[in-house]
Image 1 (tube, rainbow, N blue to C red):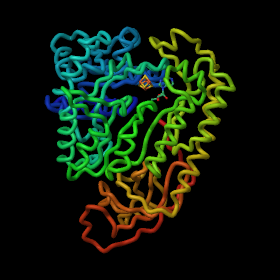
Image 2 (image 1 turned 45 degrees about the vertical axis):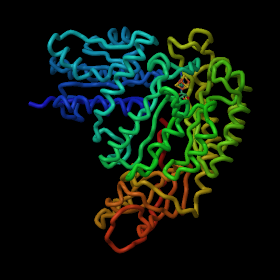
Image 3 (image 1 turned 45 degrees about the horizontal axis):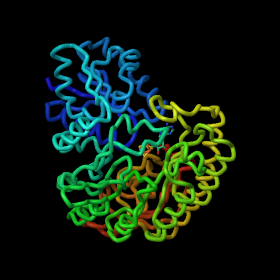
Image 4 (image 1 turned 90 degrees about the vertical axis):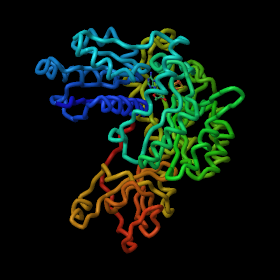
Length: 493
Ligand code: 5AD
Ligand code: SF4
């Protein structure tokens, strides 16, 4: 009987990719994937520690699988990733039936650890001991043996893939657990990355998203050869079949001109930068140890927009950080008004044990104040998002069609008989675009004339006679515009 594995993933793109790699490795050992925990022989939870909410999500998921373990005592339950690295004791206390705890640097060993649990029935723990040089070697080795084991069925779509170019982080923002859960910053050798991109493109992948905690700090040195992110991108840009290159997430101080030139000059590079500012107040930024001021950030933004005309920029904010006065918060409001981001991800500060902020500063902003500031900042951002999206109306944009829209609509359902679906994809400036079309457009790049906009979505008509790179061997046809759903919301992750 083939063994079945069930996996739940919480957190960032790095975790989505890690889950893909773990499933890829398990498939090589004969496992198949199931979406039912009750059917599974191995149940894995890939976890996030960045905010308390994410941790609680994992603990409640673990609570739910307790019954699975009761019904099937041979089932192997594993906690992977950031919480495994950070909270081994707590996991053992709150979920003593967990069989294995595997940190971010040890995920390549999951198949062996499962076998060990089976053979010994003893819990297995594999985590990094600390930010040591030994840790570096260990992780470097895992780049070589681990990343090629990928699993297309775990990707966002078959034609989009994440590619890790860097692991860890050395910035040590005081609020953040990442430097301790993911270890020191290391840039992966460019040749490994180029090979991986080539393999992905051979499998039909059209868009790669290069990921790293501070992806634009990427630098790889070998002898006297220095590869920056701009060189890395240039080195993969001409791969035939590759249509789009994205990179996330950027650190404001490392937004160098060579990178901005690459974004402008290289046609496959998506004209979108995610550059978290976190706060508009210099004192708060200082306590966060972000190493820049609000005016530095605004200058960086102006330079980016000057060097890459039309570039979309998005940001992250933390509200209610330790000692954030009403006046400090108003500076974030001012910054968000002025910066005109396409969108922002706004988070309430969540104290994380082991961070410098938890050690040094009191988490002194009451929850209701954090909540109010979150809503206020979001309201201003939404106004900007609305204006940003409205400015696209009347344009024709290139969209890589990802699949049926999650928004759905009555109109589309009514037209299912005619094979017309409401489809969604992203433009080259990272706008979400919704339009009607047929299934055969999925995975292709089409041109869409934008005729309507909401704060988070553009709506339009696909011009199928202008499909890029597809043999549609049918009459050119212009689909009618979808009717906008009345109400919807997109989750901010
Ligand atoms: N509390 C709230 N938000 C956080 N982030 C990181 N650490 C914390 C924390 N302790 C946010 C930052 C970061 C995003 C990924 O998560 O805004 O950019
Ligand atoms: Fe965390 Fe700061 Fe590193 Fe981002 S740059 S992962 S916020 S420490």
